[in-house]
Length: 146
Image 1 (cartoon, helix red, strand yellow):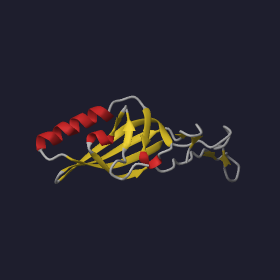
Image 2 (tube, rainbow, N blue to C red):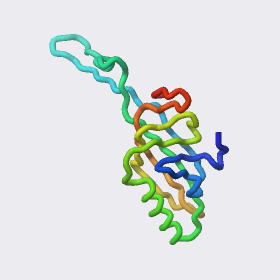
Image 3 (tube, helix red, strand yellow):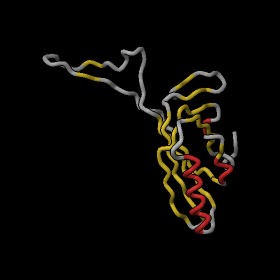
């Protein structure tokens, strides 16, 4: 496990450490189960079709990182922002790893939003990814929702 100063995420063959970023927060909640419930005319109650496919299905997983980067000058901040956007936005889904979930790979992750907040010494950046609900355990190869 990486220490707090080296924790971040890796996607598209690059890691946030190479961008001088410090991770403040990481959220990757368990995706919600999709419920398919229908009512039928002239019948009390409803039918739950959620498990007809043999098991539960889930919504996409949303992963959010809050990062900070020390970027002192205004022109450097502008350049940093543009380069970070080029790294993360407009790319095909890929594997995403993070030291927070050291033994797992987030499958088919794609950056959906980057929010920059100007702070006194640089940027606070909130980066959001959408991924497959299942993660792959790198030790067993098992795909889990967890």
